[in-house]
Length: 367
Ligand code: C2E
Ligand code: CA
Ligand code: CA
Image (cartoon, rainbow, N blue to C red; front, side, top):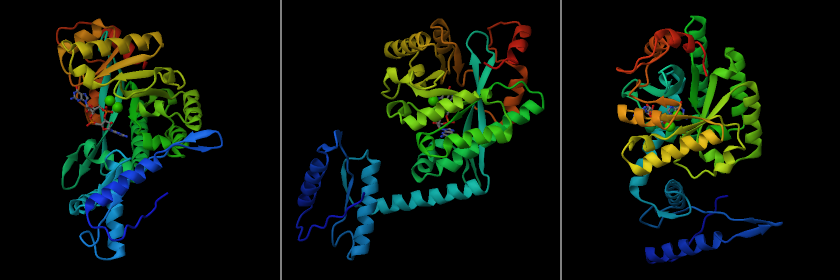
């Protein structure tokens, strides 16, 4: 699916860009296979002799680098090669190899952030969030390595490590008599597309011996948009085992609501970008309220994430949002610190009062 076009005797860049634009317009025309109308998009990378290389191998390599840059820019566009792209590519390749080593050397860690019941602060779940304990750079945030891990495919072994670590942690807590809530694990779209993913989840549950009911997988909204029937069936198979599914960052994509019901989704997570503007931002308030109402009518659970202030919390309680997650209750914590909260069973904000007795009963009842 890659082609090379050679343009001889090019005198100015403008000619090249004109040809690239025309090629792209031509390729974008729909064509028929049987009765199906198919469209393809193309990404074009361009290297020019002699500025970008004076032999065929160098020109091809640099055109390739520019093509990957075009893909990064959202596909369906063309890009000229530029020296800085090689620097970027080299840096990305270094990071990729560093991630690979990090996985081998067991440098990744999980933090856990509690999710609480809006009504009384009972801990109803914990979300596992990955960190990289880098030997030189200290704690590295996922924003810095997840995109490269996704692009390189390393997200697949990394995601498997996360799932394994979270399930093992859950088991360890259970064996030591800590009442554990459900653990939520993030799954990227690329990971879900890997053919072995669904089997690996089932295998990890079996290997660690946790109850599948205690695992929730957070999927991105994008999977709702291009449902592949094999994947949907696989998700139903895991659901039948007991695994729960949530849609992360809900409201930021363009998913069709009618699709939600085609998936075994039990929970929507209201994206923190909408929570940030509460209670005064009219748009955010409207969106948050609408998601809560919609979830209720579709019989789905809802959690608002990124709750940082008392005002946001009050607004969401008023709007009958059943679950909350955010710095107001707790930051993501290492296992030993979150264990203290799990043993307590709830997080009560100053000024809120609920009897500790009802809490300790509810805490043993993950929902
Ligand atoms: P996410 O799944 O949306 O996770 C929520 C992020 O919001 C986390 O950032 C969390 O620390 C942060 N957060 C929680 N409460 C608050 C709050 O009150 N205010 C603010 N400002 N932020 C809050 P983190 O841990 O840096 O993770 C960032 C993203 O990286 C995650 O977003 C997720 O998409 C990805 N990620 C993290 N761990 C994993 C993983 O194990 N696998 C995959 N595929 N992605 C992961
Ligand atoms: Ca998440
Ligand atoms: Ca999220």
